[in-house]
Length: 442
Image 1 (cartoon, one colour):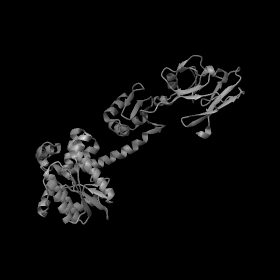
Image 2: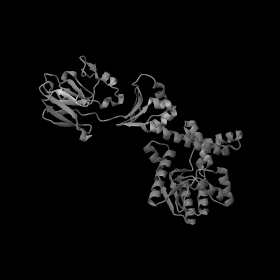
Image 3: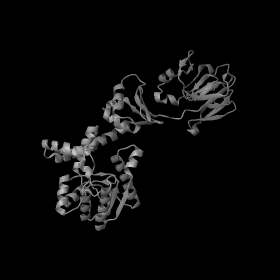
Image 4: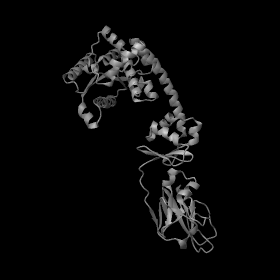
């Protein structure tokens, strides 16, 4: 068993020369065999034991047992008691989840404090089978089907290749002592239900169940790698535009992106698989449909999915007096110039050239509001600003970034897009006011 143990470690590069290990040792069969094998392999190991104070005197006896064995083997020993039930109540989680959180938090502290390289736990093949079966019952993706990895960051599972029966047979043959946890016989826990009720029945269908399972998870691990490469490629479809992210509809179509792949792309923004299915079903419909996560809003625009953070601070209006010669908007400085040369006009959308006599100060800069309208330059009639933005192909998510300049109650300039025809410079204009970006501030 030692040779196979070392081969598994080498195959998955679990332990490098000179690394120091922290072993999570409960006193049960798996962790005691792990401790025994690590000592035979002459690894540099320290032992950590958690006392969750859930089984009265038995918990104390377990701790004494692990401490005695560890010291007899010459291993540095760490022990900590936890108020597990109090923590579970305070956090609103199950006792099992509370114990998991508490132990891994403490293990990570030990790794840092004592400069240890890896945390080794005693998960074996049966544990992995139970995990995958539970994942299937709850609903899962590729990661859930491949089960636990031999290595996940600094956490390693050197016994993942071994069945529990093999481990027990080895412990008996080598005279390795262990403590039995009475909770393992209970049907109250989901894992124990699988262990005692489901696995025996499945083994009747396939006596080599765990060996078959091992081969399947090896395949699934490889499939996951292919899928992760695919998702890395698809991540290039996410295009950042200001504080938003866009995914072109055509890119999704060309790359045959289905709901699961889309859900993986949208996961960082808080969207799930069911929402991703709804997005794809609505993608060819009328523009403007919205989907919300806790942190983001997704809008289906004409050509793209647009994802923006929610809960942004509203824009505070700016007031511009007649005496001002500049103002700042979204980190960009705008210069205000007065001129009597009304014939030398720049005539571009990024510059506002207005008849000074028609303006009422202070001018006000505010955000777009539903119902806004103006008379676009070159038109005699009025137009809703929302319709103007559609014509200008301004994405729906950027409506919130559109700023308008008002004289009194009337819009004089959709900043960066179009002035109002009523305020344009004419042959009768005596003085114009020119407002343009200071290129040095961009």
